[in-house]
Length: 221
Ligand SMILES: [Ca+2]
Image 1 (tube, rainbow, N blue to C red):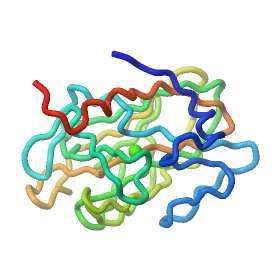
Image 2 (spheres, rainbow, N blue to C red; image 1 turned 45 degrees about the vertical axis):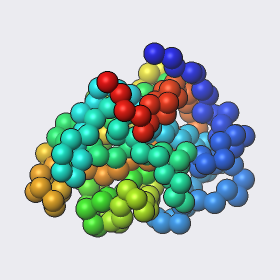
Image 3 (cartoon, rainbow, N blue to C red; image 1 turned 90 degrees about the vertical axis):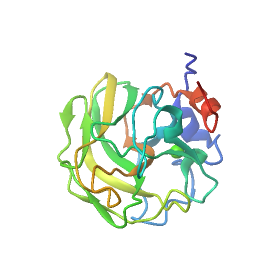
């Protein structure tokens, strides 16, 4: 598998991706949930969900199955970071993994950019786990405004202002837990995930799986 190393710090500094939200200048922020505050000496790093490992992953649609690259949806809608997001992960234990490397240990503000296709929905550690380096983040429930995959309205939801980042490799997991949020089948439902944003004064890099996008919308054996 071809991984292209990309230093997100450089992107954040240069705004090289027109669709990527970044921390530079007076770039427009998301209209909902207020602006993400990037303090003096801090940087915002955007880790796109569509660049995380999806091959072989089993999700679930509103009713029926969904898996692998079909979990990535392309969208030209306003507010979709990088033009793609992850959806149809309505399956207990379905997990998205964001691996990144930190120059040193530190704390970070952590945001997950998400929407709910189930109407206004409150995600909690009980129905949607957020785990950093195998430690559960006991976040306060996140009320996510209802919208849809076809007319997405994503919002940056603050999970914690004090995520503990370790020097070297870090792994953030978003874990769908058994619940009854899926109002169609009265079974497990999940949010759609656009990206994760990390605001910290610790330098962060990661290896986005850019080739994921080569598979989107293709029928594969
Ligand atoms: Ca995205």
